[in-house]
Length: 335
Image (cartoon, rainbow, N blue to C red; front, side, top):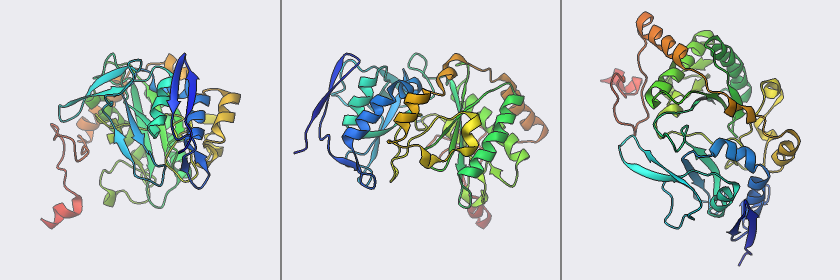
């Protein structure tokens, strides 16, 4: 049987079993490597997770084994790990872990958690997001470089409405932009703001960017996945390991280094050295909270001047007022 090891973190002793189990066969990284990685970048990872309801993406047998998302905390959750009660679109509730120390991250890693998916809210107010998240998702025929071009243009769109974003790699081919906002808007309003921003970007780059929900309409363009701001949709936290063959991680970046970056540059081996040298390059994000009023006024203008209303929600989401039919366009034409 593989050995276990005790880790002393934040005044807590956390036992990690099967420390030598291989999680990333192509690179040879083990469960112990994942734990040591989380400790090395712990303050940065915790900055994006602290007091946020967090879903665990678990790979107990490594990236080549079965995986699942764990939303509800298990009964054996240690009493020193805080929780937050969240409401799903269905109206049901769940208690998720809301980490406030690095020891909690190691405890989750012992369960096989690789990627942490925090909600864009704090446990003190789970109905009002304090982060607006923009997911720039490359479609077939596009790549990370296309997402970078879209991100630079989106930066200009945001600036025109008084907002600043912090970029990070998804750990795959995409890019995420985070905008800290005042927690005075609902999920519906913040999602509406992302749609408005996406439409502005689409108008500037019609051949390169799309907000089309249906894949058959997207073409070879970057998709602004506005539904990542719908309730119960989350994005991998900064510094989270991703279930890729080369063990990439979601890497926070500065705007100045974005053009020269590539997602494969950041993994379990390279990020600890970068973090030790640079620290958390998004640390100052917590000092800001922007007002979404100008963007929601933009959404109102879209509705009034261009007759642009809501866009489809995810299929498992209850039907929303004003939402267009959730019917694939090609099927609608067949009827």
